[in-house]
Length: 307
Image (cartoon, rainbow, N blue to C red):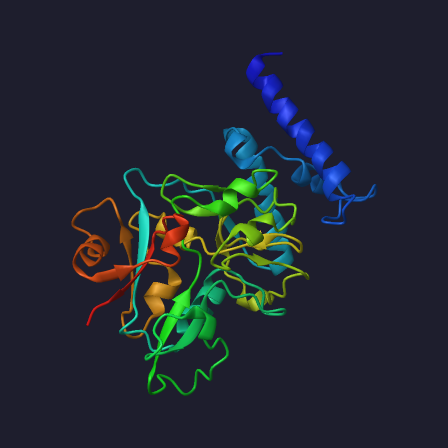
């Protein structure tokens, strides 16, 4: 056995040992039972996404597409689109324009197949007092979206900050989450064991755990999915914003659903490596700040004031 194959074998054997001996013993996950189908065991013990060769990846995708198509009674596609060369995604949000309507929240839910019951939202919008500034400890999370914008207040949406130095990826014991070349932090739901260490490490509250089986109505399921993005999640895994990877990695690319739906143009998305892009102009010419700068996570999600 070559050194590379031996190292790969040892990694997978270690993962099996960790899952069976530690995670299952602690009640973190439920292993397939002895009567489980062969496909369930194959999915549970498949190689890490980044280690799959072309044929192995094709087999995994075929299995998932057949599974989801049968479950939701429609043709479901699962993309594996890779990062675009020379692209590092960034996001900017104009706090002087956001009206707190929460259309971004529900556009994200619709696009990314989030659970409706129980509800899971990857974006949360906070209402803040203008006189007190960005004091998140005083933020109102459950304001009435029918009565916005409220006098004397401004609004601040928060989601995954797609950190350049993400603390969440460092604590994962099975390497189920990592940062891609285009800067997007992703999760492999087939590898996630639900230990929630990443949730504890994230200083932005951007990761969400499926405590129950996600309630995703067949009629509302978006069939255009990505393996590392909006494909249906099982119970017991962590999920998060991926800048709509199933849309933004296409050529020509599409904007994330939250950016596209914004009625006041408060959201801006683009390539940080392109000196001619709108997002580069905003960062270089507006009053820009990032959340919790002192932590040195280096978010690629920027807030600014246009006026």
